[in-house]
Length: 294
Length: 196
Image (cartoon, rainbow over all chains, first blue to last red; front, top):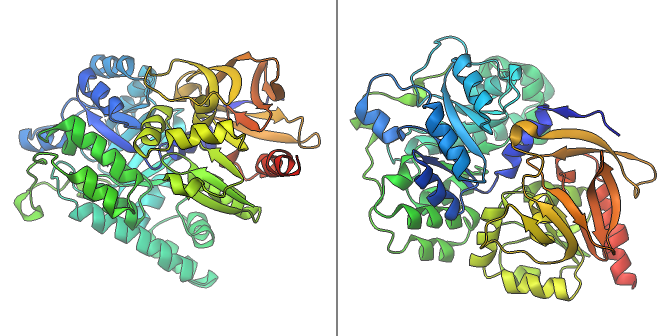
């Protein structure tokens, strides 16, 4: 009996596994959090402004007010996540003290450190980090991240960058799987990633933590595209509450994520949802959040 | 023999991998036709609120109720335990439950993620073997019916219980590489049901 340990890596990664196949939704109020839970969200991301508004407003984006995070924790029974700035370990300490279930060390907020990410092993709360390629994903895992998500390009309603990142990460995992043992040393060098992690993915064919998709999902078809490409779950930021009918769209994206290989279900849930968020093309933006992080 | 794993949301891939490692044929269940011809069904961990809604929208609620009535062998882990229990506290009023085992459970009964933990369990069913139980925002068993057998406890709480052909765990055997509980389900629940 006993030998109890909390906050071990299996306990942290375990929550990420439980969210698989689900949709994590950005919410800015307790009312939105309840709409998300009612629609079947597996977790909510509590923040003051969705990425589309951060992009519009400019300026420095920081951790949300603990009072609003508390309000959302009190409003729903599903896990609650919140964002800290890259490298801002004090924001992460505050979020942990509030009892959030996952911290997103997020490029959507303005980075606090241009060289270092948070030492995530120093925390009991699990972390999710964004990545654009396999090397970045493995560096975040080596720092203790229990979940990786594509960065995509948040707040654009444009899936193109998330697709690029998923294809890069999953394509390189497939290529590493074809390498012989001598070539893995070169892969570790090229990826700027720890050799043991490269060897692990070569033998298992998968990341050691779940890989989710984030950044630009606006429609049920976008969510299903991410899942068919190999994401294990999806984050939807601005895409729900910047659309005409958030409750219906949220529900439709949940159904599409589960039944992502069933075009008949996808067609059914895509009907009559009203307008999605408008979205922006990549050559129309002047700040790429995906370039934040190192 | 074929085992169905409810694959709407949650850690279903890990259960599918576990049974494959035991050379057991599996099917991911997302629609009612996938239930045909299975010899046992796993309801995995995940978020019980989301699972409940997805069960209803996939029109799986009635087929699953029929499966319970016909005594299909069932294995529920974490959220699966919540969905199979007779009585649940802390659940949404519109959440489905299948009354497959006479226990009461409290949703998130051990607290939030920061209170999640792993611990060695003594399993009555695996030849005196220890089993590493991973508990994630786990349900706590608060009442046991008279016909319910306790197979493992953590401190004083029952965490692995069985009544007839329904086996439920508040932890996640699919998250460890130890396959002994999946093997127990096959040998002592599914094969025992076939022999009966």
